[in-house]
Image 1 (cartoon, rainbow, N blue to C red):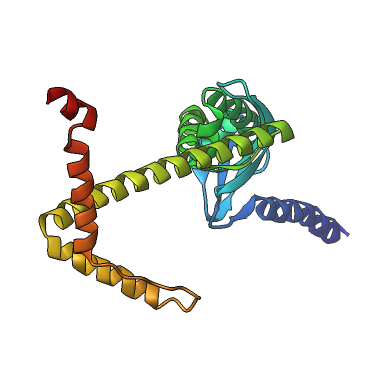
Image 2: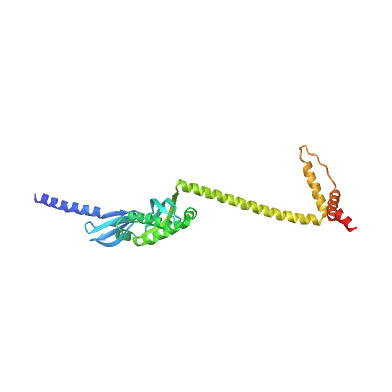
Length: 268
């Protein structure tokens, strides 16, 4: 009877010891760290692998060090040129100091989300609508830098920020379309004017060359007739010698230089 009682007494502490050992064994994955507190005070960061945590005396908070994706809800933003837009973004961040993420902030995920929303509204409100649409890379870098500076005290590293969508009202979309159409019309007019200027310069150079060489005018005249003759329409050509045309031109100039008949009679 006594031996049976002693064996039962030893079984209870043995079970308690086995339970304590099993409870003390913790396994942390490669991307996990354990923030260990001893009697309520921070002790050390353990992991990854097999670690021992003594129950009651020590407590452990498990932290995930992988990159997290935070979807920032759609925010109403008023740009610097007083245009109302709705913007949403995505933030990539990760915990690099597990002890700070546990000790310095109550809920680092909620804190990072709220900070990303306020920073998004603040930064975009300092830029015009054209900058939001055309300079997204610069805005992403500015927002990421500000978030990283403010979350550094929490042991969080903001890797990247991407603006997903910039939604406009229908009236603003129509106004932008009219502006783009007017801009295209202006460019078309400028290009047309530049073409006319270049063509006039080439015509002037061609006229100078043709006036210096009379044979060039004859060759140009024959080339024009050849191009007209190749047309298969009902076209009839009556070629005239250039000397005949020049004679008419000189006769007209002499007639213009001759004095009127009244003046000649008066002088006699």
